[in-house]
Image (cartoon, rainbow, N blue to C red):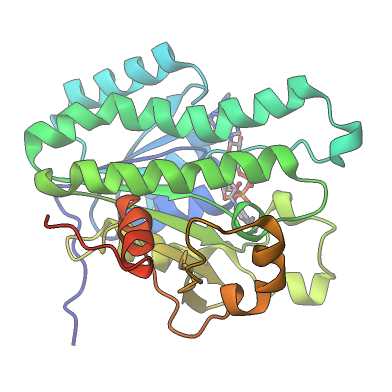
Length: 294
Ligand SMILES: NC(=O)c1ccc[n+]([C@@H]2O[C@H](COP(=O)([O-])OP(=O)(O)OC[C@H]3O[C@@H](n4cnc5c(N)ncnc54)[C@H](O)[C@@H]3O)[C@@H](O)[C@H]2O)c1
C-alpha cells in the first residue's frame, strides 16, 4: 500500500484558486499539511483562505494576474520571505474566449495565450531558480482535452493548452537533475467553464474535488515526471503522444507515395511514445537502415 501523502513543511502556490478546480486543489493540498498561497484576481482567494484556516490549515491569499510577470515575481518573493521555500506550483488559472476561428478576434487569441501559456511560464520562471537551489520542486501545468484533441470554437484556448504540454515536456527534462518534476493535468470538472456544455445530470458527476487527487499525486514526493494525467468523475487516464512505426520510402519518396501508403504509415501496430525530441531523428535513421555510433 502507498503510504498517505504528507505535505507538512511544503509550500504550495495554486493559481486561479479562488473558485472552481483551483479551490478544490488548494483545499486538498492544505488538508495534507501544505501551506498554500491561494492566488486569484480581486478578492476571490479570500473565501478559500478562510475555508482552509477554518479547517485548521495554513493559507495566504495572493491577488495578482498570472499574466503580469512583475506581479507574479512579487507574489513569489513575498511567499519566499514568509515561508522560506516553494515546493509546489499548480498552474491552474484560466479563462475562455470561445468563438469559431473565422469570428475570433486576434486580441482575444493573444489574451488567452497570455493567461494560460504566459501565465504558467511567468509563475514557473518565478519559482524555477528557487526549486533548483532547493533541489526539489513539483509543478503542474493544467492542459485540456481541447488542446490535446481539439474542440470546435477553442482555437485560442487549444493552442495555449498544447503549448503548456510542450513547456512541461522540456521543463521536465531540464528540471530532472534537480528533482523538479513537471507534469500536466487534463481535468474535467463542473465549474463555470463547463456551464451549458453538458446537461445538468451529467455535469453533476464531474465534481471539482474528484479531480484534485490527481493533482495531489502529481505534487507528491513520488510524483512521476512528464506525465499527462487526465481526471474527471473519479476516472483517471494517461494521455500519451505516440509515433507510429511509419514507413521508410528512401530518398526517392514522393508526396504521392506518402498518400498511397497512408494506411501503412498510420498503422498503430508497435507505435511508441518518444521520450525526447531527438527520438524522432533516431527512429528515422533506424528505419532508413542507417546506423551511427553514438
Ligand atoms: N473545468 C473543466 O472541465 C476544465 C477542462 C480542461 C481544463 N480546465 C482548466 O482548468 C483550470 C481551472 O478551470 P476551472 O474549470 O476551475 O475554471 P474557473 O473559471 O472556475 O476557474 C478559473 C480561475 O482562474 C482565475 N483566473 C482567471 N484569470 C486569471 C489570471 N489572469 N490570474 C489569476 N487568476 C485568474 C479565475 O478568477 C477563476 O477563479 C483552467 O486552466 C482551465 O482551462 C478546466
